[in-house]
Structure formats: C-alpha cells, structure tokens
Image 1 (cartoon, rainbow, N blue to C red):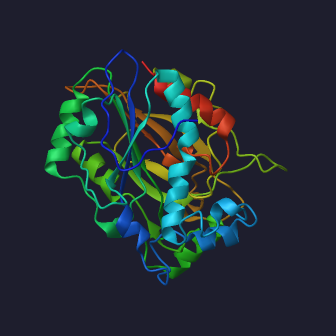
Image 2 (cartoon, rainbow, N blue to C red):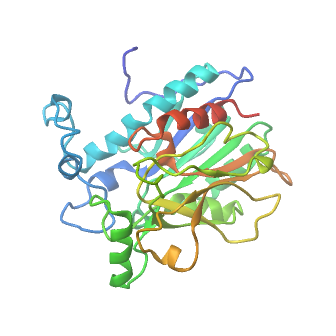
Length: 333
C-alpha cells in the first residue's frame, strides 16, 4: 500500500477513454464536527456513542484516543475510511485514482464545484451527508458549471441525498420513525442533504429524498431482501449482477415529484420491513425507490443517477453485491 498524503492540491488526471471518478462530500466538515454533543437532534454521533452502540467492534488500539479522533470528528473519519474499498475497486477498473473533495474540509478550505473539480472528472458523486441546518446550497456558479459539464459526452452526475428522519413537529410520528429504523445512533430528528436538494431543484431532477426506511430481510435470516430490479429500463447496466444493496437501517425513499417516464426511470426498489410500523407502509407502500436514472436528454449529454451514498461504503454490509454496482458505475458506457 502506498503512503497517504493530506492537504495537497489535486493532481489532474489525463483523459484516456476510461472514467475519472470524483467523490464530493457536500458537508462543511468543521460545522458537522463541532456540533454540540449535548444536542439530541440533527447531528452525527460521537465516536464514543458509536463504540458504545457497536461494541465491541471498535474496541481495538486503532480507535483509542492516542490513534483516532474522538467525538463527532472521528465518526466523520469513519465515513472517509469506509469508501476506501470502493476507491480501490473503481481505481482498478479505470486506471485512475478516485479523487476525494469536501465542500469545506478539515483545514477550513472551501471548495465549490467548479472547473478545478470538473475538468478532469467524468463521474462526479455528490454525497449529501450535510445536515439541513448547515445551510449548504449550490450557488449559481456551481449550477452553471455543472450544466456546462453535463453537456459533455460521457459525463455522469451521481446524486446521493440521504435520509430525512423526523421532519414533522408531531412527536408521536417521530417516535414511530425511531422505532421503525431501530438505530440508537440516529436521533428522532436527523434531516440531511440541503446541498443535493438545491442541485436537484436547479437541474430539474424531479426527486425528493424523504423518510429513513428499514429494509426488509429474508425470513429467518439477517440478510437484506433482494432488490427489485427493472433490467428492461437499465440501458447502462448499473444493476447488472446487483442482487442486493446494503442493509442500512434508515435509507431514503427517492420520491418522484413528477411522473415516471422514459426520462426518469426507477431502476431499483427496496422492500420495507413490514413488521415495523411506519407512515410510509401505513399508506399502503411496500417498496421505496432506491436507484433512479435520468438518461441524457435535451442539451444534457450526461447521465444523472440517484443512489444513496451508504451503498459506496463498507459500514453496512452487502459488499459482495455492491462490488458489482461499483464496477458497473466505474465502467458504464
């Protein structure tokens, strides 16, 4: 394994016909990391809370205070570490390293999406793990840059808005949602993805991320239920040999705000756990939209894909099937 580098300028990757992939964490790392741990809503867990809930998974010297950031910052670093397997798979498939950017990084540098990111990127993955309270929104320059970039053949914008748990003032509903997902690390209100929402609105992507839904499992096992796929709609083959996604206990429903059509295709739906009450299932729904594809159209030559960022991490299982998703995305035509 090569040495790690930090806090250096990105080295551009030459075009060679293979995809150059970038991850863009849409958060302000300092804002998220410095949330008051006394707050019970709209913050990430501290590493102490993670260690307690996941005991004894992190009871090793690697995660002691002498070797690993404690508090919320440590949890953010777990997310960074959890994408390394995806980066290795994508790098092997493309011959290019996966570039990783943050909207505001640990050192306080602000990096909007502009030509510094887009010039040598073919697939940009925007991970929407920014809390709504942080006020992260795309500005006009970023939207213009993305529109122009999407006019280039072979581009793909992957948007990954995360869950929106407890968006109501109804405390009974918040409690129902909490018992449905069953994750003690997620508070009764945790609202994500202001930045990706602003991009979806600006780029006319008719999707709204809502809820935090627990996938169903195969009876008498802990394995996630198979993904419902629609291969006839999946021209790029994103879900070829992808039988399951990850078992993350609070996944967003990508609710369409307009009709499904040839221009907006739901490629994959995930069955919801029917044993845990939730307003989504109370309304008669049994599956949520997990993977959406907007093919090129009009003056947009690039693709737009929506799938949750947790499917590119190793924190929540499903890795064997997910490796096929990673390879499909890295090599899509």
